[in-house]
Length: 199
Image (cartoon, rainbow, N blue to C red):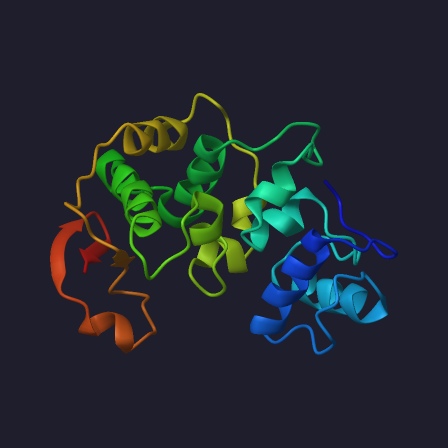
């Protein structure tokens, strides 16, 4: 599905609510895709490295965590839906490319662990696109297509099949590059490659 100016629906209302919660939309939540909504979507797209069109297509809806709307008859820009495995692999690629294989699986496991924790969104897309959560989203690496035979795809598959080298961790960070003071308040459970994994 694609939401665009002139539409009026419960889906537009849902999107307006998200945009309002994040400070992009300042209008009334009325379910009508008017100019205020159009401008809010453009602002959101610009901030999240999505092509700025003002139309909420598959990538934009997925980024907002509105997976069910995005997937209701949705076709990705490249002509195919992005599966959870593919999205997880892209996140692993952006966050842990160059890390040991176990470290790549561990990054995937952290994302999956968040979907099962009440403090985080319930879907893989929701977790990955949660504002400010992952560098791969803010720098646009999440949009880089990956080779289906690459190790990050195998790592995503292993994580989806239940391998969790972190034993339930919800966070990871690179101590050499982490700028958040808060992340250092997390208890470190394990270190794999350049990443600390913690709770």
